[in-house]
Image 1 (cartoon, rainbow, N blue to C red):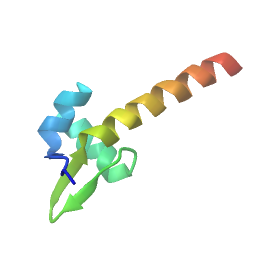
Image 2: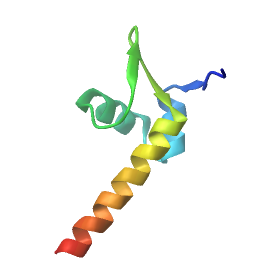
Image 3: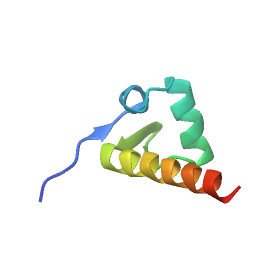
Image 4: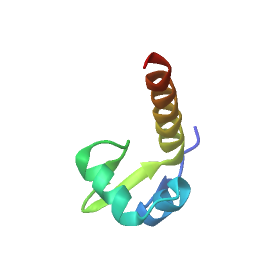
Amino acid sequence: MSFEPLLDVPEAAELLRVHPKTVQALARAGKVPCFRMGKYWRFRKSALESWVDEQLQSSQQSRRVS
């Protein structure tokens, strides 16, 4: 079994192309898949990619409905 390396806030921000403070705010609000290790937020790249796909699908569906 292989272990997926975890991303820290700056790496997650780079992946999502947003400011690190935005990633921290999303994490604190529970809006992005993450977990805490001590005082640090950690992210799985695969979970972030799935989350982005879900966000895109839901925004496309909401445009179709209206």
